[in-house]
Image (tube, rainbow, N blue to C red):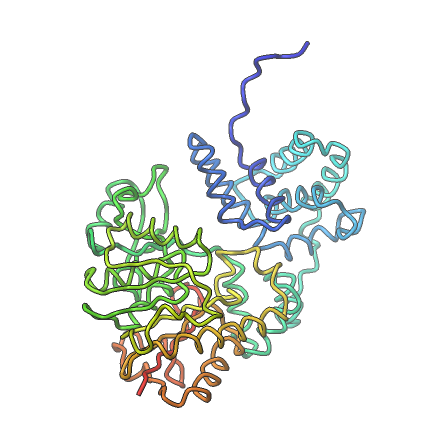
Amino acid sequence: MAHQNKPAQPAEARSGAYDILKRVEQGGYADRLLDAYLERNPGMDPRERGLLTELVYGVLRLRGRLDFALGRFSRQPLARLETEALLLLRLGAYQLLELDRIPAHAAVHATVDLAHRIGMGRVSGLVNGTLRALERERTTIPWPTPDHLRAYLQHVCSLPSWLAKELLRQFPNSESRALAESLAGPAPQTLRVNTLKTDREALLAALADTGHSARPCHFAPEGIVIEKRAPQGLPGDHEGWYQVQDEASMLVAHLLGARPGDRVLDACAAPGGKTTHLAALTGNQARILAIDKHAQRVELINRGAERLGCSGIEARCWNLTGAPDFLEPGSFDRILVDAPCSGLGVLRRNPESRWNRRPADIQELAALQRQILAQVAPLLRSGGHLVYSVCTFTGAETDDVVKDFLARHPAFIEEDFRTLLPAEWLALTTDTGRVRTLPHLHDGMDAFFVARLIKS
């Protein structure tokens, strides 16, 4: 007998994670899809919300590791499986291999049940058999050891083959291993205190009062690391007391050195975290033009500025591969080019990028970075400062871009951060006087690169 008024199923972590992961396979972005899902399900149990986030980011981060393990026990090659079946197996394998708090029988049963609920009952036998074999024989998996470093980076640290080779080309073996291990882990949750409305001590106290465990960041003076969240939301969200932002990203606005009264160009500004930070550091006394090529992302800048109480910001849509003919040459005191890049330094936060990026992207993005720098260079006044930053570590997008720019623009001279920064920040500098942060060396922060130039 049909149930005409069957109540809607409550939002559940595993089915939500499956839906999000399937949409990521179709080209979606995990963070946006996760945010949209949670907004549609505001009454979702906090434990389910936490598990949902863990499953989405964990499966994407560790896909290479999960597939290596599953390949030992699936009776069909993974490459021949339907996408739906492979996603189910990865969800089950992540719970078995990475989440000790979930009993093995519960992880297997829930995954088989999910197969039926999404109309994939025909693969339930495959899912059940593969996951049960994985649980029984998990101790026999021949994980590569660091003695076979490239295989270790690929199958244990979950890097695609080309990226494992890139790390080994860029860094010594011990550094490659440490960086890869860091990128395989979860990113810390960090907040930038909005100093236009409160201070770090007050927000730390409010977090403690509401049951959250938090500590100050090591380098950024307005940064906070959330070490353990309470079930309730973070205090001050609606009031604009903070912005979610990685500590490395917080350093960039400080390194630009904007002052009250300056005219500042944020050339690739969306979603606006650094733009609003510049407004806060100058006490809303700078005139900031924030440019992004996507109109919908320009709206993100405006909404963020309103939420945080930032004034003096004008957001405008423009593609800086073309000359911004509406701007006068020499009309800016400070220019920030936080350029589009491969994002390899933030793989923990955008884990789908580790599978979507290709080696050819690096050179294409480096060409785009050089093009943007060439368009904004004439806009800087004599004696003005330009900061170039990217959230990646490839040589082609970092040192090579700066070298090329200086060769083509003799009016610019690079400044040495070692002569500019406080002593406690010198650990972030390279032997060329640039700033380079890496998660395994610098308190878990994302991998960023920053250089500062002055127009003579």
